[in-house]
Image 1 (cartoon, rainbow, N blue to C red):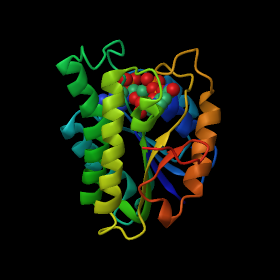
Image 2: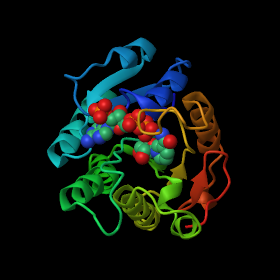
Image 3: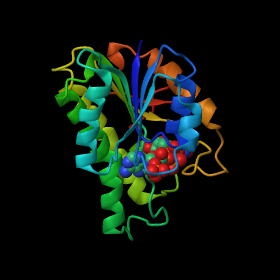
Image 4: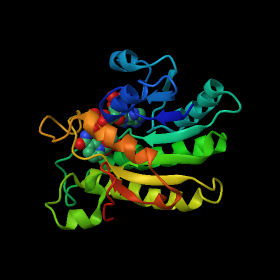
Amino acid sequence: MPVYCITGTNRGLGLEFVRQLAQSGDNTILATTRSLESDLGDLHAVASASTHILECDTGDLKSIHAFAKEARKVLGPDTRIDFLLNSAGVNLASWQSSLTLGPDDLAAQISVNVLGPAKTVEFLLEAGLLSESVRILNMSSGLGSLQRSLAAPRKCAGYSISKAALNMLTVHQSGDLRAKLPHVVVIALDPGWVKTRMGGDGAVLEPHESISGILKVLGGLKDEDNGKFLHHSGEEIPW
Ligand SMILES: NC(=O)c1ccc[n+]([C@@H]2O[C@H](COP(=O)([O-])OP(=O)(O)OC[C@H]3O[C@@H](n4cnc5c(N)ncnc54)[C@H](OP(=O)(O)O)[C@@H]3O)[C@@H](O)[C@H]2O)c1
């Protein structure tokens, strides 16, 4: 009975993770959302009997802390998370360049896209909720690759900087967690350009295509994949 914990599941890629995972009654799912007060109709529509919908605002440390406590209550004393999918993310003020960065916009992106996944891991670890071989996916982006950005027109500066920072967080977590969880595998992953509110209608992939690829990648991860930056196809991406 694998246990999945996913952030940002009311729409977009997080919702698609829940939709696909909920098709097997064997999966226990902690589907988290920024606010339980928002419209969760789509999430309720795909949730299974073993899906628990919990609040976790990944831009708010108190909320992440409260979520870890709630997760412990829901899972009980002996059950741990096997897959933690840090999917929640924001792309704010995408028109800004490195020459026009808005301090508040950059701070908000660092808060949700970097500090959120960092503290989610930290608080779940503290609560003893991560299994010894937990797979942790930090949802990155091709825009987080320094090498790719050098070869392409630069865009979404603040977002791109925050995803590059998320990639470095992944590298640090992959080392720091190994001392505590001997078979942990932490990866950064680019889902491709996907038709969601963030990706827009011009994107090339449907959510089900990206997520089915990602679930295959997750299922095939080995100890030696710890600290890698992967594409939804499983190929490695240059940092
Ligand atoms: N779509 C793409 O082409 C693409 C490409 C590369 C990377 N990504 C990454 O993939 C991930 C998912 O993106 P998406 O395409 O699904 O975007 P999306 O359609 O805009 O959905 C973003 C999700 O993140 C949630 N979220 C935002 N801020 C949050 C917070 N503070 N606390 C909790 N949840 C929060 C949103 O919840 P609310 O509804 O409450 O805001 C929503 O559920 C992101 O990390 C994104 O950077 C996407």
